[in-house]
Every structure is written in structure tokens, then in C-alpha cells.
Amino acid sequence: MVSAVASRASRSAREAKIHIRIAVGLGSLGALLAAACIVAASVGPVTIPPAHVAGILLAPTGLEFGSHTRTEELVVEQIRLPRIAVAALVGTALSLAGATMQALFRNPLADPGVIGVSAGGAAGAVLSIALGLHGLFFLALPLFAFLGSMGAALLVYGIALVGGRFSMASLLLAGIAVGSFMGAIVSSVLVVVPRNESLREILFWLAGGLDSRSWEHVRLAAPLILPAIVIIALFSRELNLLTVGDDQARSLGTNVGKLRPMLLAAASLITGVAVAISGTIAFVGLVVPHAVRLVFGPDHRVLIPVSAVAGALFLVVADTLARTVMQPAELRVGILTSFVGAPFFVFLLIRNKRRATAL
Image (cartoon, rainbow, N blue to C red; front, top):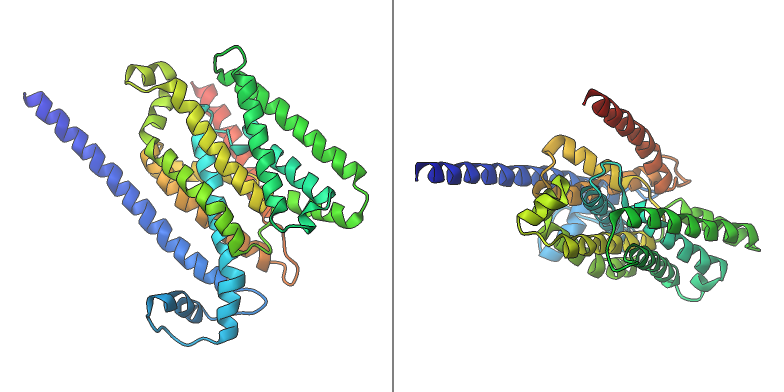
């Protein structure tokens, strides 16, 4: 009886610590995200004081805060806020997809591109540009990119299910093969595309960027990204079990055969949507979950929600730097994240190698 009471007390204490870490993580990163959004909406070719930006954002609530002009209101509401919202959605999607795949593959170096989803999106978008379809309908490019991402995901899953049994090893190998095939499609289009203008557009899209994003892109992405995020968060406890091992997860009542494909599908979905509206932005799914893990620990009940906010913060800051550091020119945000992510990836390789040697 005494041991049972002690066990419940210990479990309650652990749960309380988890809730505290979630509250601290979401509170601190949420405050930083709000500040980053205000700064992002303030800077640019037309500089707007942060107080005016705050007044514009608070105006719908009925609160009068400072004074601002109609021009400032249009710049913030119609140009900068949609871009900030898209950056937050894409950063959240990529970081959560990375955290999910690292747990499912039990590999700290896994990221959303590991199963060919990003490559499929790139192939679809490149074909849309090369055929001139994006000029006929402004959502043709994200639509083709999304179809390419989902087509690649379904192809990879189908190969992994050959023989009636799902195999993680087959999934990874199929992802490599499909990713290489999609890369070959992109390379072929780059070689044969007839117009220099189209070639430039393709290269810009492949570098990843958020220029000219509108509220239409937000409405396109949010209904697909947000429900998938909720699904992943609901199964964060099961992700902890999967990182230990499939046998351990099964012994505790987890249906691994259904759970893993479902979470992989959710991660692939949000990756495909992110690629469709932003192009190829590398390393977000690798850098952000690791940074959160180093600060808040490996428990996915904390890691998943905190990574969502951290991913949004990371890409909002990265995009703000990308469009302001070389004014009036604009650096592609995918290039900037690669500059940050590549050294971090090398650091992780060295760190994991040293850890393996020590063991």
C-alpha cells in the first residue's frame, strides 16, 4: 500500500515537472516569437516603428495603441503579415516532421527529406514552372509541388509494403531511390528548359524562399498543417515508447503496425505542404528538434509542442534576416538555413561518433 502511494506520488511529481517544462518552453519561446513577428513586420524597404505595428495588430481587438498611417497598415496587413504567417507555418511543419522522423527511425540525423518527400515536391514544382502552368494559375506551383510530395510519399510507402509487411529498412531504401529519381527529373528539366527566365525561377524556387507569399498561401497551408500537428502531439507519449524499441512499445499496448505509418503519413503531409508553399528549405527539421532536445530534454511530450513554437521562431527570424541583410537585394531563406544547418549537421556527426566510440 505504501509503495503504491509512493509510486503515484513519484509519477505525479514527474508529470508536474513535464508540465512545468512545457509551460516554460511555450511561454518563453512564445514571447520571443511574438517579439520576432513585431520586428519582422517593422523592418524592410519601408521601416515602420514597432509601436505602430503593435497598434495595427491590436486594432481588431478594439484596443487603441499608438497611431499609424493607412499606408503602414496596408504594408503590414497585406505584405508582411502573410509572409510571417507562412514562415511560422513552414517552420512549425518542418521542425515537427523532423522530430517525428527522428523518433520513428530512432536516428538523430533523420529529417523530412529522408523519405523523398522534399524531392518529390521539388520535382512537381519544377515541372509546373517548366511547363508554364504557374503563369496560368497562381496556385498551380504549390498544387504541383504538393502533388509531387504526396506522390513520392505514396510511392515510397507502396514499395515498403510490398509483400504485405511494412519494413523500416525498405522504407529508408525506397526513400533514397525515389529521392534520387526525383532529383534526376529536376536535373533533366534544368538541362532542357528552353527559357533563361524559367531556369532562373526554378533555381530560385529550389533555393527556398517566402517572397510574394499571400493570405491565399496561408489559407492553403493552415487547414492541412494544423490538424497534422494535433495528431502528432496527441501521440507524443507513444513516440517516447517507439524511441526505446518496437518490442517495448508493443508490450505496453502500442499498436506499432498502425501507429508508425500514421505518424509517417502526418509528417509527410506537413512536409509536402511546407515544400509546396516555400520551396526546399533544408535543415530546419534537423536543427530545431536537436536544439530543443538539448535545452528541454528528449521527452516528446515536451519536445513536440516546444519544437512547434521553436520552428516557427527559427524560420521567422531566418526569413527576416534573409530579406534585410542584403537590402535592397534579398537572400533566399533556404540558403541561409543551409549556412546554419550544414555546420550543425557536421557537429552532430562528430558528437555521435565520439559518443559511439566512448560506448
